[in-house]
Image (cartoon, rainbow, N blue to C red):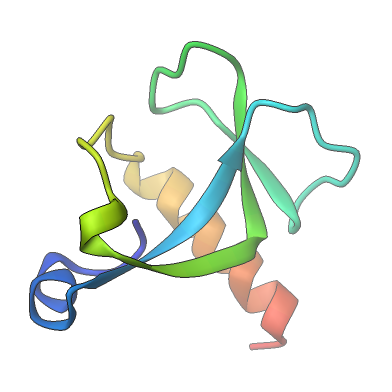
Length: 83
């Protein structure tokens, strides 16, 4: 999830990016390898695939990105949207 807890609680939604274990053809800023969370397989965030989801669709939390990795995701998103 990219959104803050207070936003999630008040809106009933979360803002998230898709994660895949399929090795991507495109590199940053479209994808970012995730290393700070232990997934069963190597995984990548698909920065261009941002979604708003109902909190009812979210399962248990599986981890939290390191601040540096979160900063990279935000930098990639800013690069894609031209900020």
